[in-house]
Image 1: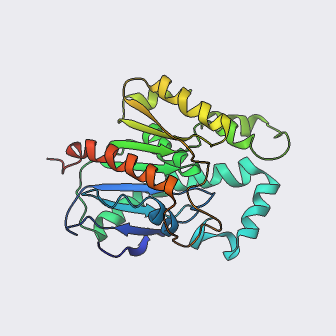
Image 2: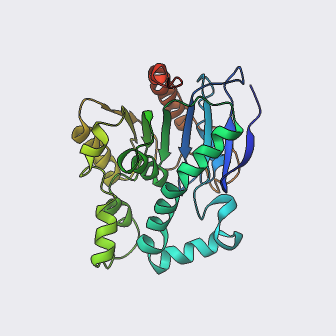
Length: 268
């Protein structure tokens, strides 16, 4: 097994895991959670998908890991307390989506990845990034997956204390991140695996089921009994041994992406 490769792609930190042969291969890109594992290195350890004949490049989310505000989680938590949606969640998602095309070009310049369609994977808030790549860009994707994904942003905001004071701007933002309502934009893009922990928040489990129903034949639900929302233990910033529930997720993702890799070769 090759050691992880670390670097930056257009300013975005990454942890890259090469395929067994180490040479040219398709690319799968991931975005991590805000819960553990909450960095690219920790997400790579939790869901390495080592048996895939593909490069797995795990990107760091804005305001997380190496890009924590003022180098500390405290500043990020202050933004959450200030305005969880418009000061934290929405800016993170917007920046992660906007910075991705340049990051992808940089990854392709640095690593021997194929120039064909990519796979996309996101956990929790990172799941919303993967869904935005599918819904809001034309980047070719051969398959996507989300794990305990932020599928309806209203459901995520409701997990935080207090009643959120929606106004016209925040209503527009949160509605743009309702991927059940936007299922039509997903259905024609790529096959989608929706992984849902049996012990995840009830609203997020319901959203996962609703998304699969709304997308239709190209979506598949994978329940993981015994999995809560996080995929790793606290603090979740450094790589840690893979938990049993994460191992089950890893196996499901490996099977899913392997089944679609034939569509990921170089474009003519």
